[in-house]
Image (cartoon, rainbow, N blue to C red; front, side, top):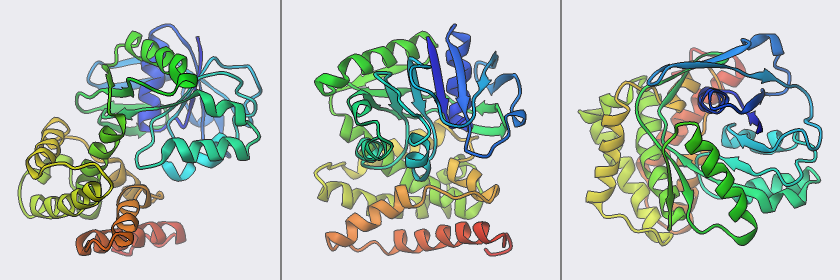
Length: 315
């Protein structure tokens, strides 16, 4: 199959290598303005199950009918611009691996704005838990085990698209699990991300450091505030379940540097608004006190603003 990876960052590179190694013809579409010479002819994954495989770089707007599958691996804030570069994607199934809430809805809005309303029926949401760090363009390191979750019962129009992506990913050696309550899994990952990503990014520590104080206490405080919002939105998690999920991920990804930490270190925009910012907005709308979340959102936003202005000295 001809598969396009939109956003060959840490996770996009990992998917590209796994799919290409499985025999697919894989191409990658970097952010607009990125020179194709920035990337190697063969992408590489280090760490768990190291491998390399040829990946072709494409530029500009993708012409209609060129690919039979599309995987969108950009961060949430780049979703709309990325979809605008797809041109006419026809009936190619589009896999979305963004963090946060309303990913399918936002992607649908982006496709309609890009003049491709028919592609909305082929959107496939996914939750991935693959701990991956970007080492260089076209090079990632997988630091631990993980899986890709897909809905068991997507809408009728998306059923075939979901089945196809499940087969392609499983055939590439990835662990794929179909879950009946997909929305709950989205919230489960959101709770973990809201506890892990901001603390690691704020303090510059690997995930494993959250197993001990003072980082542990900060992560648990953020988790409790996020858990209250989840319950108000109809997705109740007991404290025991939420903490078990958190520290299972911390242990499994102990050596990993969270994506938010990587973005802060490289002076890139972060997903703070897609994760903690989204939770804060929902909490405020429901009158839920979230002082720790508000403070950490302000701090990470401040770092992103400093990065955008070129002032890397701001704490």
